[in-house]
Image (cartoon, rainbow over all chains, first blue to last red):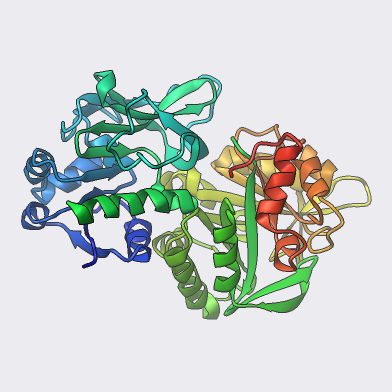
Length: 212
Length: 250
């Protein structure tokens, strides 16, 4: 049986690439914009580009906030990508203060900007935030220092190092590449734009869900 | 940041074509065959240029972009015939990550700022098509290097950045397709002097050409003939660049 992936469609940007990447990997892709679909998901993807406040508003309007929190508490895999990763946090100060999903403790803040360009657009190498940080995650088989593609101005700042999963060096700054709490992972980079190594991460995710 | 190796595909729908100095086009085959091969070889980005870009042809390029985005999982930039904010929106919806503007931006420079405000500066690439003049400067051209303007190419490039361009694609029209090397003086006049990434295009014939232009501080190189005619594969190019001490994504 094909692994099934549910992608949340909440009006925040282009789902094209994420959908096509999973289709290329021969997954059964379903788009979800209702609480029922989230409740019934086995592997959930929260993509998104754009501003934090509008992203949360998109989830709220569709009554998806509580279902997402409920889903995350159930130990099923949830992957946030880019804005989707940031929405997992408790709050953001992008254009005013906004409450997030609060699934991963911590906040979202502007990237450090000394000596670097904002937005950060381009390829950057990722590495584990601590020795065990990738164990049991979808990055487990990813070689350390794999190149991934970033487009962002803000980053996740976990409140405790245990939630920090991957880092990347941007100029002199170590920035957050991934946050993690149990089966929930938030990727700041775009695996669906990160070439064959990005596809390999998504393939690892599909493998883990088809065994569960 | 690593030097981006960008494969440039000039499209005359439904074919991949290649010319010399953007003229004398030769049909090379189906764009998807080339694009997929470059993706598998580890290209860092694909650039599709619709060189006909008439209103009549519009849907063909959208279909080609959308088909590419189904198979190619690296950033995709599309240029040619982009006249309005709606054109940009359609290309982004079809799966493009960035959109490249030249002619329309010269005719109406405000388009750059409008696009940057709506879609973000990271989406907006301005192409500067330059031809070296007898006086040692460069003039900006439009319509795929066919129509001249009174603009100094370097001054125009600086102004485009001020207006909100998130990246510059510098094309030396008089080198394009010749494989005689980049116009290093033109690229040097802008690389490292603007606060946005600069991509060099036009004239790459060998890895040595790429090394020379990389040392000027460009962020990316757009390659066409060199790749399409099989002079070198992307892994070969990247290995040679790495051996020369230039950081690349492998």
